[in-house]
Amino acid sequence: MEISTLQKIRYNYYAKLPDEISGNVSGISIKLGEPTESLADRAELKELFKHTYGKPVACFVPGKNEASSRQLNVGVILSGGQAPGGHNVIAGIFDGLKKGNSESRLFGFLGGPAGLIEGKHTEITASIINRHRNTGGFDIIGSGRTKIETPEQFAASLETAKKMNLDAVVIIGGDDSNTNAALLAEYFLANGMKTQVIGCPKTIDGDLKNEFIEASFGFDTAVKTYSELIGNIMRDANSAKKYWHFIRLMGRTASHITLEAALQTHPNVCFISEEVAGRGTSLTEIVNTICDSIVKRAAAGDNFGVALVPEGLVEFVPEMKALISEINEIVARDDSFEAQTPETKRERVCGALSAAAKETFESLPEDIAGQLLRERDPHGNVQVSLIETEKLLVHLAKKRLAALKKEGKYNGKFSPLTHFFGYEGRAAAPSNFDADYCYSLGFTAFLLIAGGLTGYISSVRNLSKSAGEWVAGGIPLTMMMNLERRHGSSKPVIKKALVDLDGKPFKTFAASRSLWAEKTSFVYPGAIQYFGPPEVCDVCTITLKLEHE
Ligand code: FBP
Figure 1 (cartoon, protein in one colour):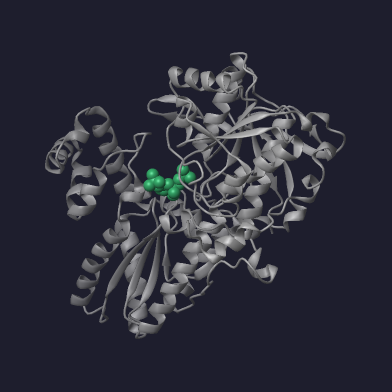
Figure 2 (cartoon, rainbow, N blue to C red):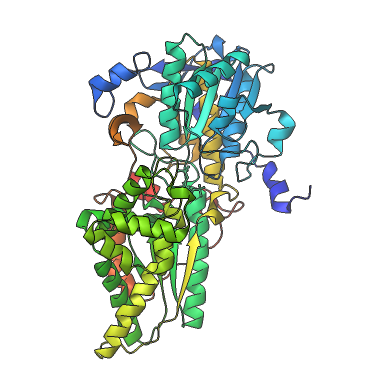
Protein backbone atom coordinates (compact mmCIF):
# COMPACT_ATOMS: atom_id res chain seq x y z
CA MET A 1 0.00 0.00 0.00
CA GLU A 2 1.34 3.42 -0.95
CA ILE A 3 1.64 5.86 1.94
CA SER A 4 2.41 9.56 1.97
CA THR A 5 5.86 10.82 2.88
CA LEU A 6 4.41 12.66 5.88
CA GLN A 7 2.79 9.47 7.17
CA LYS A 8 6.07 7.59 6.80
CA ILE A 9 7.94 10.24 8.78
CA ARG A 10 5.17 10.49 11.41
CA TYR A 11 5.53 6.75 12.13
CA ASN A 12 8.81 7.69 13.76
CA TYR A 13 7.42 10.54 15.88
CA TYR A 14 8.20 9.63 19.46
CA ALA A 15 5.02 10.48 21.39
CA LYS A 16 5.81 12.12 24.71
CA LEU A 17 4.72 10.89 28.15
CA PRO A 18 4.46 12.86 31.39
CA ASP A 19 7.87 12.62 33.12
CA GLU A 20 6.30 10.91 36.15
CA ILE A 21 5.34 7.82 34.10
CA SER A 22 8.11 7.74 31.53
CA GLY A 23 10.55 5.56 33.49
CA ASN A 24 10.63 1.85 34.15
CA VAL A 25 7.08 0.64 34.89
CA SER A 26 8.30 -1.48 37.81
CA GLY A 27 9.21 1.76 39.56
CA ILE A 28 5.78 3.44 39.24
CA SER A 29 3.20 2.63 41.88
CA ILE A 30 -0.35 3.77 42.48
CA LYS A 31 -1.37 5.97 45.38
CA LEU A 32 -5.07 6.07 46.27
CA GLY A 33 -6.80 9.08 47.83
CA GLU A 34 -9.97 9.30 49.91
CA PRO A 35 -13.31 7.68 48.89
CA THR A 36 -15.26 9.85 46.44
CA GLU A 37 -18.90 10.74 45.80
CA SER A 38 -20.88 11.14 42.58
CA LEU A 39 -21.84 14.58 41.25
CA ALA A 40 -25.42 14.16 42.47
CA ASP A 41 -28.03 11.49 43.25
CA ARG A 42 -25.58 9.78 45.61
CA ALA A 43 -27.92 7.32 47.32
CA GLU A 44 -29.40 6.08 44.04
CA LEU A 45 -26.00 5.72 42.36
CA LYS A 46 -24.58 3.91 45.40
CA GLU A 47 -27.39 1.40 45.01
CA LEU A 48 -26.86 1.01 41.24
CA PHE A 49 -23.06 0.68 41.52
CA LYS A 50 -22.81 -1.48 44.64
CA HIS A 51 -19.30 -2.73 43.81
CA THR A 52 -17.73 0.27 42.11
CA TYR A 53 -19.28 3.38 43.70
CA GLY A 54 -17.12 5.89 45.50
CA LYS A 55 -13.66 4.52 44.72
CA PRO A 56 -10.73 6.88 45.45
CA VAL A 57 -8.87 9.00 42.89
CA ALA A 58 -5.61 7.31 41.82
CA CYS A 59 -2.29 8.98 41.13
CA PHE A 60 1.20 7.68 40.38
CA VAL A 61 4.18 7.93 42.68
CA PRO A 62 7.69 6.48 42.52
CA GLY A 63 7.80 3.08 44.23
CA LYS A 64 8.38 -0.61 43.60
CA ASN A 65 5.49 -2.17 41.67
CA GLU A 66 5.83 -5.92 41.18
CA ALA A 67 2.32 -6.22 39.70
CA SER A 68 3.44 -4.27 36.61
CA SER A 69 5.18 -7.37 35.26
CA ARG A 70 2.05 -9.56 35.38
CA GLN A 71 1.26 -11.24 32.07
CA LEU A 72 -2.02 -9.65 30.95
CA ASN A 73 -4.63 -10.17 28.24
CA VAL A 74 -6.35 -6.91 27.42
CA GLY A 75 -9.10 -6.03 24.92
CA VAL A 76 -9.64 -2.56 23.48
CA ILE A 77 -12.73 -0.97 21.91
CA LEU A 78 -13.06 2.22 19.86
CA SER A 79 -16.57 3.56 20.37
CA GLY A 80 -18.55 6.26 18.52
CA GLY A 81 -17.33 8.87 16.04
CA GLN A 82 -13.72 9.06 14.93
CA ALA A 83 -11.39 11.41 16.82
CA PRO A 84 -7.74 12.06 15.90
CA GLY A 85 -5.34 10.13 18.11
CA GLY A 86 -7.33 6.95 18.75
CA HIS A 87 -4.53 4.85 17.27
CA ASN A 88 -2.07 6.41 19.71
CA VAL A 89 -4.25 5.47 22.69
CA ILE A 90 -3.97 1.88 21.49
CA ALA A 91 -0.20 2.31 20.94
CA GLY A 92 0.14 3.61 24.53
CA ILE A 93 -1.71 0.56 25.93
CA PHE A 94 0.35 -1.76 23.71
CA ASP A 95 3.71 -0.27 24.69
CA GLY A 96 2.77 -0.25 28.36
CA LEU A 97 1.73 -3.90 28.26
CA LYS A 98 4.93 -4.95 26.49
CA LYS A 99 7.09 -2.85 28.82
CA GLY A 100 5.50 -4.69 31.74
CA ASN A 101 5.75 -8.19 30.27
CA SER A 102 6.63 -9.05 26.67
CA GLU A 103 4.17 -12.01 26.84
CA SER A 104 1.18 -9.73 27.51
CA ARG A 105 -1.31 -9.52 24.64
CA LEU A 106 -3.61 -6.84 23.29
CA PHE A 107 -6.79 -7.66 21.33
CA GLY A 108 -8.83 -5.15 19.37
CA PHE A 109 -12.61 -5.65 19.23
CA LEU A 110 -13.85 -5.05 15.71
CA GLY A 111 -16.44 -2.41 14.85
CA GLY A 112 -16.95 -0.92 18.32
CA PRO A 113 -18.80 -2.39 21.33
CA ALA A 114 -20.58 -4.84 18.98
CA GLY A 115 -17.19 -6.59 18.64
CA LEU A 116 -17.21 -7.40 22.37
CA ILE A 117 -20.83 -8.56 22.31
CA GLU A 118 -20.25 -10.78 19.26
CA GLY A 119 -16.72 -11.85 20.22
CA LYS A 120 -15.19 -10.44 17.01
CA HIS A 121 -11.59 -9.45 17.60
CA THR A 122 -8.08 -9.42 16.24
CA GLU A 123 -4.73 -9.50 18.02
CA ILE A 124 -2.83 -6.21 17.80
CA THR A 125 0.77 -7.05 17.03
CA ALA A 126 3.87 -4.84 16.87
CA SER A 127 3.76 -4.71 13.08
CA ILE A 128 0.08 -3.63 13.09
CA ILE A 129 0.58 -0.95 15.74
CA ASN A 130 3.72 0.39 14.08
CA ARG A 131 1.74 0.97 10.88
CA HIS A 132 -0.77 3.09 12.82
CA ARG A 133 1.34 5.22 15.16
CA ASN A 134 0.52 8.94 14.93
CA THR A 135 -2.06 8.40 12.18
CA GLY A 136 -5.66 9.62 12.19
CA GLY A 137 -8.82 7.56 11.86
CA PHE A 138 -10.04 4.47 13.65
CA ASP A 139 -9.33 2.08 10.78
CA ILE A 140 -7.03 -0.14 12.87
CA ILE A 141 -10.07 -2.00 14.29
CA GLY A 142 -13.04 0.20 13.28
CA SER A 143 -15.62 1.78 15.55
CA GLY A 144 -19.37 1.58 16.12
CA ARG A 145 -22.23 3.14 18.06
CA THR A 146 -23.82 -0.02 19.55
CA LYS A 147 -24.63 0.47 23.23
CA ILE A 148 -24.25 -2.43 25.62
CA GLU A 149 -27.63 -2.10 27.34
CA THR A 150 -29.81 -5.20 27.29
CA PRO A 151 -29.26 -8.06 29.79
CA GLU A 152 -28.42 -10.30 26.80
CA GLN A 153 -25.73 -7.86 25.58
CA PHE A 154 -24.15 -7.70 29.05
CA ALA A 155 -24.20 -11.50 29.33
CA ALA A 156 -22.69 -11.89 25.84
CA SER A 157 -19.92 -9.40 26.73
CA LEU A 158 -19.13 -11.38 29.85
CA GLU A 159 -19.05 -14.60 27.85
CA THR A 160 -16.53 -13.08 25.40
CA ALA A 161 -14.33 -11.81 28.24
CA LYS A 162 -14.45 -15.26 29.87
CA LYS A 163 -13.61 -17.11 26.63
CA MET A 164 -10.69 -14.80 25.92
CA ASN A 165 -9.52 -14.90 29.55
CA LEU A 166 -9.40 -11.12 29.54
CA ASP A 167 -7.83 -9.30 32.46
CA ALA A 168 -9.19 -5.99 31.24
CA VAL A 169 -11.17 -4.12 28.58
CA VAL A 170 -10.38 -0.53 27.66
CA ILE A 171 -13.31 1.44 26.20
CA ILE A 172 -12.25 4.51 24.24
CA GLY A 173 -15.30 6.73 23.85
CA GLY A 174 -17.38 9.77 24.78
CA ASP A 175 -19.74 10.35 27.72
CA ASP A 176 -22.19 7.59 26.73
CA SER A 177 -19.44 5.03 26.07
CA ASN A 178 -17.74 5.80 29.37
CA THR A 179 -21.11 5.47 31.13
CA ASN A 180 -21.25 2.07 29.45
CA ALA A 181 -17.73 1.33 30.77
CA ALA A 182 -18.94 2.09 34.31
CA LEU A 183 -21.94 -0.22 33.91
CA LEU A 184 -19.78 -3.00 32.46
CA ALA A 185 -17.21 -2.69 35.28
CA GLU A 186 -20.04 -3.04 37.81
CA TYR A 187 -21.62 -5.96 35.94
CA PHE A 188 -18.33 -7.89 35.72
CA LEU A 189 -17.64 -7.46 39.45
CA ALA A 190 -21.21 -8.32 40.40
CA ASN A 191 -20.87 -11.53 38.41
CA GLY A 192 -17.53 -12.53 39.90
CA MET A 193 -15.50 -11.76 36.77
CA LYS A 194 -11.89 -10.68 37.08
CA THR A 195 -12.07 -8.49 33.93
CA GLN A 196 -11.36 -4.85 34.82
CA VAL A 197 -12.86 -2.01 32.75
CA ILE A 198 -11.06 1.27 32.08
CA GLY A 199 -12.39 4.19 29.99
CA CYS A 200 -10.53 6.80 27.91
CA PRO A 201 -12.04 10.25 27.11
CA LYS A 202 -12.60 10.61 23.36
CA THR A 203 -14.74 13.00 21.28
CA ILE A 204 -14.01 15.90 18.96
CA ASP A 205 -17.08 17.61 20.48
CA GLY A 206 -15.06 18.47 23.61
CA ASP A 207 -18.06 17.88 25.88
CA LEU A 208 -16.51 15.14 28.03
CA LYS A 209 -14.62 17.35 30.44
CA ASN A 210 -14.67 18.33 34.08
CA GLU A 211 -12.29 19.08 36.91
CA PHE A 212 -10.37 15.86 36.25
CA ILE A 213 -10.74 15.45 32.50
CA GLU A 214 -9.40 18.70 31.09
CA ALA A 215 -10.10 17.79 27.46
CA SER A 216 -11.38 14.91 25.41
CA PHE A 217 -8.85 13.78 22.82
CA GLY A 218 -9.37 14.67 19.17
CA PHE A 219 -10.82 18.13 19.92
CA ASP A 220 -7.42 19.77 19.47
CA THR A 221 -6.71 18.35 16.00
CA ALA A 222 -10.28 18.56 14.70
CA VAL A 223 -10.77 22.20 15.67
CA LYS A 224 -7.32 23.19 14.37
CA THR A 225 -8.20 21.54 11.05
CA TYR A 226 -11.53 23.41 10.85
CA SER A 227 -9.80 26.66 11.84
CA GLU A 228 -7.30 26.21 9.03
CA LEU A 229 -10.16 25.72 6.53
CA ILE A 230 -12.12 28.68 7.92
CA GLY A 231 -8.99 30.85 7.74
CA ASN A 232 -8.47 29.83 4.11
CA ILE A 233 -12.07 30.72 3.30
CA MET A 234 -11.67 34.06 5.10
CA ARG A 235 -8.60 34.87 3.04
CA ASP A 236 -10.48 33.98 -0.13
CA ALA A 237 -13.45 36.10 0.97
CA ASN A 238 -11.17 39.02 1.76
CA SER A 239 -9.51 38.66 -1.65
CA ALA A 240 -12.58 38.23 -3.87
CA LYS A 241 -14.75 40.47 -1.65
CA LYS A 242 -17.98 39.08 -3.10
CA TYR A 243 -19.21 36.14 -1.01
CA TRP A 244 -20.74 35.64 2.39
CA HIS A 245 -19.74 32.19 3.68
CA PHE A 246 -21.98 30.32 6.12
CA ILE A 247 -20.04 27.52 7.78
CA ARG A 248 -21.67 24.91 9.98
CA LEU A 249 -19.32 23.08 12.33
CA MET A 250 -19.69 19.66 13.95
CA GLY A 251 -19.99 19.26 17.66
CA ARG A 252 -23.49 17.87 18.18
CA THR A 253 -25.16 19.58 21.18
CA ALA A 254 -22.16 21.49 22.52
CA SER A 255 -20.60 24.51 20.78
CA HIS A 256 -17.01 24.05 22.03
CA ILE A 257 -15.73 23.51 18.49
CA THR A 258 -17.45 26.62 17.13
CA LEU A 259 -16.26 28.73 20.07
CA GLU A 260 -12.64 27.62 19.68
CA ALA A 261 -12.77 28.13 15.89
CA ALA A 262 -14.14 31.66 16.49
CA LEU A 263 -11.33 32.44 18.94
CA GLN A 264 -8.82 31.20 16.37
CA THR A 265 -10.24 33.03 13.32
CA HIS A 266 -12.48 36.01 14.36
CA PRO A 267 -15.56 35.54 12.14
CA ASN A 268 -18.07 38.33 11.48
CA VAL A 269 -20.93 36.33 12.94
CA CYS A 270 -20.88 33.32 15.26
CA PHE A 271 -23.57 31.71 17.38
CA ILE A 272 -23.05 29.67 20.52
CA SER A 273 -25.99 27.33 21.08
CA GLU A 274 -25.70 27.44 24.86
CA GLU A 275 -26.15 31.24 24.78
CA VAL A 276 -29.09 30.94 22.39
CA ALA A 277 -30.69 28.47 24.82
CA GLY A 278 -29.89 30.62 27.85
CA ARG A 279 -31.40 33.74 26.37
CA GLY A 280 -34.23 32.00 24.53
CA THR A 281 -33.12 33.71 21.30
CA SER A 282 -35.68 33.18 18.52
CA LEU A 283 -34.94 32.29 14.91
CA THR A 284 -35.99 35.82 13.90
CA GLU A 285 -33.48 37.34 16.33
CA ILE A 286 -30.73 35.09 14.98
CA VAL A 287 -31.51 36.17 11.42
CA ASN A 288 -31.57 39.81 12.51
CA THR A 289 -28.08 39.46 14.03
CA ILE A 290 -26.78 38.04 10.75
CA CYS A 291 -28.47 40.77 8.70
CA ASP A 292 -27.19 43.54 10.99
CA SER A 293 -23.63 42.51 10.19
CA ILE A 294 -24.37 42.13 6.46
CA VAL A 295 -26.03 45.57 6.31
CA LYS A 296 -23.30 47.38 8.29
CA ARG A 297 -20.52 45.80 6.27
CA ALA A 298 -22.34 46.52 3.00
CA ALA A 299 -22.63 50.19 4.00
CA ALA A 300 -18.81 50.25 4.19
CA GLY A 301 -18.59 48.57 0.78
CA ASP A 302 -17.81 45.10 2.18
CA ASN A 303 -20.28 42.69 0.63
CA PHE A 304 -18.50 39.70 2.08
CA GLY A 305 -18.11 37.95 5.38
CA VAL A 306 -17.99 34.70 7.32
CA ALA A 307 -20.57 33.29 9.73
CA LEU A 308 -20.02 30.24 11.97
CA VAL A 309 -22.94 28.07 13.00
CA PRO A 310 -22.68 25.17 15.51
CA GLU A 311 -24.41 22.06 14.24
CA GLY A 312 -26.57 21.77 17.35
CA LEU A 313 -28.01 25.30 16.97
CA VAL A 314 -31.41 24.18 15.61
CA GLU A 315 -32.03 22.16 18.73
CA PHE A 316 -31.62 25.24 20.95
CA VAL A 317 -33.75 27.83 19.14
CA PRO A 318 -36.96 27.75 21.23
CA GLU A 319 -39.49 27.28 18.39
CA MET A 320 -37.29 24.68 16.64
CA LYS A 321 -36.60 22.89 19.92
CA ALA A 322 -40.33 22.57 20.58
CA LEU A 323 -40.92 21.37 17.02
CA ILE A 324 -38.10 18.78 17.13
CA SER A 325 -39.24 17.40 20.46
CA GLU A 326 -42.83 17.02 19.17
CA ILE A 327 -41.54 15.25 16.03
CA ASN A 328 -39.33 12.95 18.18
CA GLU A 329 -42.39 11.90 20.17
CA ILE A 330 -44.54 11.35 17.08
CA VAL A 331 -41.79 9.25 15.47
CA ALA A 332 -41.19 7.25 18.68
CA ARG A 333 -44.94 6.38 18.90
CA ASP A 334 -45.17 5.27 15.26
CA ASP A 335 -43.42 1.93 14.63
CA SER A 336 -43.95 2.06 10.87
CA PHE A 337 -42.74 5.68 10.46
CA GLU A 338 -39.29 4.89 9.05
CA ALA A 339 -40.79 2.70 6.32
CA GLN A 340 -43.01 5.50 4.94
CA THR A 341 -42.41 7.70 1.90
CA PRO A 342 -41.31 11.30 2.60
CA GLU A 343 -44.83 12.53 1.67
CA THR A 344 -46.57 10.15 4.09
CA LYS A 345 -44.08 11.02 6.85
CA ARG A 346 -44.86 14.69 6.33
CA GLU A 347 -48.63 14.07 6.39
CA ARG A 348 -48.42 11.98 9.56
CA VAL A 349 -46.28 14.56 11.35
CA CYS A 350 -48.39 17.54 10.24
CA GLY A 351 -51.53 15.73 11.39
CA ALA A 352 -50.15 15.22 14.91
CA LEU A 353 -48.28 18.50 15.59
CA SER A 354 -49.64 21.22 17.86
CA ALA A 355 -50.81 24.38 16.08
CA ALA A 356 -47.66 26.36 17.03
CA ALA A 357 -45.27 23.59 15.99
CA LYS A 358 -47.18 23.07 12.74
CA GLU A 359 -46.80 26.74 11.89
CA THR A 360 -43.01 26.55 12.43
CA PHE A 361 -42.81 23.32 10.42
CA GLU A 362 -44.73 24.75 7.48
CA SER A 363 -42.60 27.89 7.43
CA LEU A 364 -39.44 25.85 6.80
CA PRO A 365 -37.97 25.32 3.34
CA GLU A 366 -38.95 21.87 2.04
CA ASP A 367 -35.46 20.33 2.24
CA ILE A 368 -34.97 21.39 5.89
CA ALA A 369 -38.45 20.10 6.83
CA GLY A 370 -37.52 16.78 5.17
CA GLN A 371 -34.22 16.61 7.10
CA LEU A 372 -36.11 16.93 10.40
CA LEU A 373 -38.00 13.75 9.51
CA ARG A 374 -34.92 11.63 8.78
CA GLU A 375 -34.07 8.50 10.75
CA ARG A 376 -33.39 9.09 14.49
CA ASP A 377 -30.10 8.01 16.16
CA PRO A 378 -30.00 4.96 18.48
CA HIS A 379 -31.07 7.24 21.38
CA GLY A 380 -34.19 8.42 19.50
CA ASN A 381 -32.77 11.90 18.80
CA VAL A 382 -32.71 13.83 15.56
CA GLN A 383 -29.29 13.56 13.86
CA VAL A 384 -28.22 17.20 13.90
CA SER A 385 -25.29 16.55 11.59
CA LEU A 386 -27.86 15.88 8.82
CA ILE A 387 -29.74 19.18 9.21
CA GLU A 388 -28.41 21.96 6.99
CA THR A 389 -28.95 24.83 9.43
CA GLU A 390 -26.57 27.03 7.43
CA LYS A 391 -28.91 26.78 4.44
CA LEU A 392 -31.94 27.59 6.58
CA LEU A 393 -30.20 30.73 7.85
CA VAL A 394 -29.24 31.80 4.32
CA HIS A 395 -32.83 31.27 3.16
CA LEU A 396 -34.19 33.42 6.00
CA ALA A 397 -31.46 36.08 5.65
CA LYS A 398 -32.28 36.48 1.94
CA LYS A 399 -35.93 37.13 2.81
CA ARG A 400 -35.04 39.65 5.49
CA LEU A 401 -32.52 41.48 3.29
CA ALA A 402 -35.11 41.75 0.51
CA ALA A 403 -37.50 43.39 2.98
CA LEU A 404 -34.77 45.76 4.21
CA LYS A 405 -33.97 46.69 0.61
CA LYS A 406 -37.61 47.59 0.02
CA GLU A 407 -37.55 49.79 3.10
CA GLY A 408 -34.42 51.49 1.75
CA LYS A 409 -32.30 50.23 4.66
CA TYR A 410 -29.97 47.99 2.68
CA ASN A 411 -28.28 48.58 -0.60
CA GLY A 412 -25.72 45.78 -0.86
CA LYS A 413 -25.29 42.56 -2.80
CA PHE A 414 -25.72 39.26 -0.94
CA SER A 415 -24.05 36.23 -2.56
CA PRO A 416 -24.03 33.44 0.03
CA LEU A 417 -22.07 30.16 -0.08
CA THR A 418 -22.59 27.36 2.45
CA HIS A 419 -20.21 24.77 3.93
CA PHE A 420 -20.30 22.02 6.53
CA PHE A 421 -17.04 20.97 8.22
CA GLY A 422 -17.16 17.80 10.27
CA TYR A 423 -15.80 14.67 8.67
CA GLU A 424 -12.87 16.73 7.25
CA GLY A 425 -11.38 16.98 10.74
CA ARG A 426 -12.50 13.86 12.59
CA ALA A 427 -9.87 11.54 11.16
CA ALA A 428 -7.03 14.04 10.54
CA ALA A 429 -3.47 13.06 11.47
CA PRO A 430 -3.24 13.97 15.17
CA SER A 431 -1.46 17.18 16.13
CA ASN A 432 1.57 16.73 18.38
CA PHE A 433 -0.73 17.63 21.29
CA ASP A 434 -3.21 14.86 20.47
CA ALA A 435 -0.45 12.39 19.54
CA ASP A 436 1.18 12.93 22.97
CA TYR A 437 -2.07 13.21 24.94
CA CYS A 438 -3.52 10.03 23.42
CA TYR A 439 -0.33 8.04 23.91
CA SER A 440 -0.26 9.21 27.55
CA LEU A 441 -3.94 8.26 28.05
CA GLY A 442 -3.27 4.77 26.68
CA PHE A 443 -0.14 4.28 28.74
CA THR A 444 -2.01 5.49 31.85
CA ALA A 445 -4.82 3.02 31.10
CA PHE A 446 -2.21 0.23 31.16
CA LEU A 447 -0.86 1.44 34.53
CA LEU A 448 -4.39 1.48 35.99
CA ILE A 449 -4.94 -2.06 34.74
CA ALA A 450 -1.59 -3.21 36.15
CA GLY A 451 -2.64 -1.61 39.44
CA GLY A 452 -5.77 -3.82 39.50
CA LEU A 453 -8.29 -0.94 39.21
CA THR A 454 -11.70 -1.14 37.54
CA GLY A 455 -14.46 1.38 36.83
CA TYR A 456 -11.92 4.18 36.25
CA ILE A 457 -11.26 6.61 33.41
CA SER A 458 -7.71 7.36 32.39
CA SER A 459 -6.90 10.98 33.20
CA VAL A 460 -4.00 13.20 32.13
CA ARG A 461 -4.03 16.76 33.50
CA ASN A 462 -2.07 20.01 33.52
CA LEU A 463 -2.47 19.97 29.73
CA SER A 464 -1.71 23.64 29.12
CA LYS A 465 1.90 22.91 30.18
CA SER A 466 4.48 20.91 28.23
CA ALA A 467 3.93 17.14 28.07
CA GLY A 468 6.69 16.36 30.58
CA GLU A 469 4.76 18.33 33.24
CA TRP A 470 1.43 16.57 32.61
CA VAL A 471 -0.06 14.67 35.55
CA ALA A 472 -1.47 11.18 35.00
CA GLY A 473 -3.95 9.27 37.11
CA GLY A 474 -7.27 7.46 37.31
CA ILE A 475 -10.68 8.91 38.13
CA PRO A 476 -13.51 6.66 39.35
CA LEU A 477 -16.25 6.85 36.71
CA THR A 478 -19.05 7.08 39.28
CA MET A 479 -17.54 10.37 40.47
CA MET A 480 -18.55 12.03 37.18
CA MET A 481 -22.11 10.67 37.17
CA ASN A 482 -25.62 11.79 37.99
CA LEU A 483 -29.11 10.63 37.07
CA GLU A 484 -30.86 12.09 34.01
CA ARG A 485 -34.26 11.45 32.42
CA ARG A 486 -33.82 9.41 29.24
CA HIS A 487 -36.83 7.95 27.42
CA GLY A 488 -39.09 8.49 30.37
CA SER A 489 -36.89 6.94 33.07
CA SER A 490 -33.95 7.95 35.24
CA LYS A 491 -30.61 6.68 33.94
CA PRO A 492 -27.10 6.99 35.37
CA VAL A 493 -25.02 9.10 32.97
CA ILE A 494 -21.74 11.01 32.87
CA LYS A 495 -22.66 14.69 32.82
CA LYS A 496 -22.08 16.38 29.47
CA ALA A 497 -20.07 19.60 29.64
CA LEU A 498 -21.64 22.36 27.55
CA VAL A 499 -20.03 25.77 26.93
CA ASP A 500 -19.86 27.67 30.21
CA LEU A 501 -21.22 31.17 29.59
CA ASP A 502 -19.34 32.41 32.68
CA GLY A 503 -16.08 30.82 31.52
CA LYS A 504 -13.13 32.74 30.07
CA PRO A 505 -13.32 31.27 26.53
CA PHE A 506 -16.92 32.47 26.03
CA LYS A 507 -16.28 35.82 27.71
CA THR A 508 -13.23 36.44 25.53
CA PHE A 509 -15.32 35.77 22.43
CA ALA A 510 -18.25 37.87 23.66
CA ALA A 511 -15.95 40.83 24.34
CA SER A 512 -14.81 40.99 20.71
CA ARG A 513 -17.73 39.86 18.59
CA SER A 514 -19.32 43.28 17.96
CA LEU A 515 -16.03 44.53 16.54
CA TRP A 516 -15.67 41.42 14.35
CA ALA A 517 -19.27 41.86 13.11
CA GLU A 518 -18.40 45.17 11.49
CA LYS A 519 -14.68 45.22 10.73
CA THR A 520 -12.70 42.58 8.89
CA SER A 521 -10.56 41.18 11.73
CA PHE A 522 -9.90 37.74 10.28
CA VAL A 523 -7.01 35.63 11.60
CA TYR A 524 -5.53 32.92 9.37
CA PRO A 525 -4.19 30.12 11.61
CA GLY A 526 -2.78 28.00 8.76
CA ALA A 527 -2.23 24.23 8.81
CA ILE A 528 -1.30 22.09 11.82
CA GLN A 529 2.49 21.96 12.05
CA TYR A 530 4.22 18.74 13.02
CA PHE A 531 7.83 19.96 12.84
CA GLY A 532 9.31 23.28 13.91
CA PRO A 533 9.30 25.58 16.92
CA PRO A 534 7.19 24.40 19.91
CA GLU A 535 5.05 27.56 19.84
CA VAL A 536 3.50 26.37 16.58
CA CYS A 537 3.92 22.58 16.95
CA ASP A 538 3.04 21.79 20.54
CA VAL A 539 0.60 24.57 21.41
CA CYS A 540 -2.76 23.60 22.94
CA THR A 541 -6.14 25.15 22.03
CA ILE A 542 -7.05 28.71 23.08
CA THR A 543 -9.95 27.24 25.08
CA LEU A 544 -7.61 25.10 27.17
CA LYS A 545 -5.18 27.97 27.63
CA LEU A 546 -7.93 30.39 28.77
CA GLU A 547 -9.50 27.80 31.06
CA HIS A 548 -6.17 27.40 32.83
CA GLU A 549 -5.14 31.03 33.06
P1 FBP B 1 -18.89 11.10 19.25
O1 FBP B 1 -19.77 11.82 20.21
O2 FBP B 1 -19.18 9.67 19.16
O3 FBP B 1 -17.44 11.37 19.53
O4 FBP B 1 -19.15 11.68 17.79
C1 FBP B 1 -19.08 13.03 17.53
C2 FBP B 1 -19.65 13.42 16.18
O5 FBP B 1 -18.58 13.67 15.30
C3 FBP B 1 -20.56 14.64 16.31
O6 FBP B 1 -19.83 15.84 16.31
C4 FBP B 1 -21.49 14.47 15.14
O7 FBP B 1 -22.73 15.09 15.37
C5 FBP B 1 -21.67 12.98 15.07
O8 FBP B 1 -20.48 12.42 15.60
C6 FBP B 1 -21.89 12.48 13.68
O9 FBP B 1 -22.20 11.13 13.73
P2 FBP B 1 -21.95 10.09 12.55
O10 FBP B 1 -20.53 9.69 12.63
O11 FBP B 1 -22.83 8.95 12.94
O12 FBP B 1 -22.30 10.75 11.27
